[in-house]
Length: 278
Image (tube, rainbow, N blue to C red; front, side, top):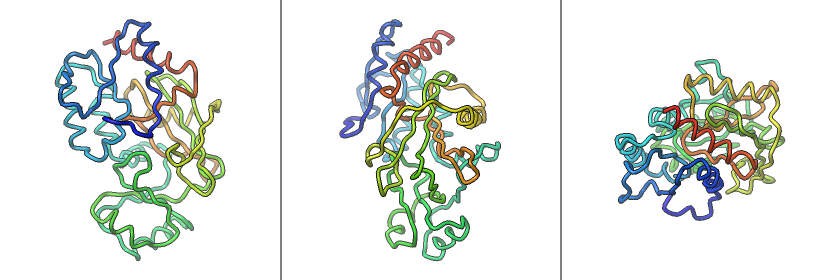
């Protein structure tokens, strides 16, 4: 981004490990109009956390990067596939367990909203756009609100039951570099909230990933059918005591290097192998 503002990023922790492997690193805004992408061997998407405000422009920049000869990671094909959260429906078709979801588009009203509670047999649901980041325009509902029309009547959106275990237990994030597991964290919301992002007061802590958690994460990654430089798998425990996929973050996920001292080195080694194999 041009200005990260209050966002927390720790990508700088990878710079020294990369330098030790012979790489020079430069941080560039995706909105820069002066950068010559062909000067780079690789361009790694890291923290363009405003891309959802102008998705067409963002994709144009990624196409320019790929056309320049620089290696874009993750590649444009994966970014386009992961751009809309409708990718979850495709993973569900490949037998990946996801949070139950209704997909809707450009229409919303009281009767429709009331039907969601009945469909999920739930007291509360969560609605959010299919293209969004950092919980922007994400709402927790226990009844219809006229405000919804202003936000969702002209965009694609998704509805899920509120997963109560996010509040009681938290949301798990597992990180993979070059297809290999690196580390895991548990994200919990602040009291009386359901959003786990730090921007909303969420708290993170490092955890040891259980075999069951790893199996669920790797099932989601295997369903993509290709190896990736980086991936973050967000999971939540459901009513059947199984882990369901909340999101498979392949574009610009925070990778929480600060939560595991060895993770910056793992990332650097993965990138170095990636480029050497090329």
